[in-house]
Length: 385
Image (cartoon, rainbow, N blue to C red):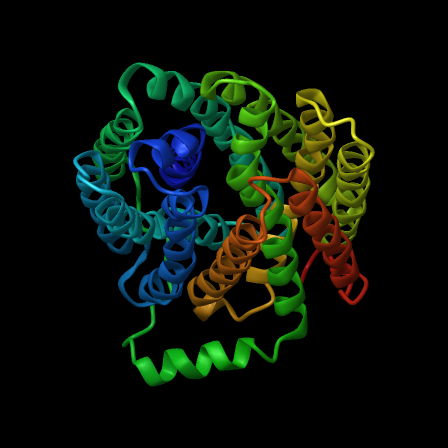
């Protein structure tokens, strides 16, 4: 059930990615303008978690999730009929706002029912299964574009939204047993402010954002890199699906290693491996050996490593806050993750990565190094904390 819920947000991110060059041509806009379709969605995916996280502490996980899925469905329907780019961007912002609930609440639901290391291991299992969605979505999105244009991908998100709402209605039970009695904006603001002083929380949330920014940057400029190399939208989809494949293996390995090594060590290990993968990718491109496999194979190393770090950083951040505000904590962590991720991804396009892959990879190598630095200041976790 949680895999299906989380997949709604992932599908809407991945399925439209192969269509970005086509959207630019369809509306006669620049790549910079076309990537707003992705960037605005990710921005709202981040901001929405600030709302849905604390709302779930007060109103429960189930009701809050229904509200989010309703917005997701509305945005999907509007996007399917968008007459121009501005309307499509607006529809995608509504879709992203709703999808934020589908992203933040499964994490909290897992945390409601597990101890910290067990929660990280369980999240790794859910994430591994959920990674099948982008594996299918990337090539499927390319095929849909070639047969139906970019609107075909938005119709598919509409259908998934309907299926998820129906399934949630019958299968999902409430897990929040310590609801807050009232939701006061001042209290929420104070709680958020207190988290900005929580060093462990901020370090882990920053690590999440930096690692995610690399993947979102790939989605922003690699479609154009592959187009410059002479590949079609569907061919790009087939290549890029290899990244979530290795991500699945990383999560499955993490599920076994986390109970033994702990959350902090897994985050450090993953961060160090990401530097290795990004160094090879950037080195090949800067030396003039840019090719599909030169981009994909090091990208698979990155994805494998994120399978180590991301589930652990996520649960580590949530468990760094008090139990009664873990919805709020999950919301802020997810929001920082998405805002940092989408901001860095957008900057790669603004600085010219769509025209020159070296620019994007140079930025991402620095991001990978910064992510490892954050792990040097983490406090080691223990089984019962």
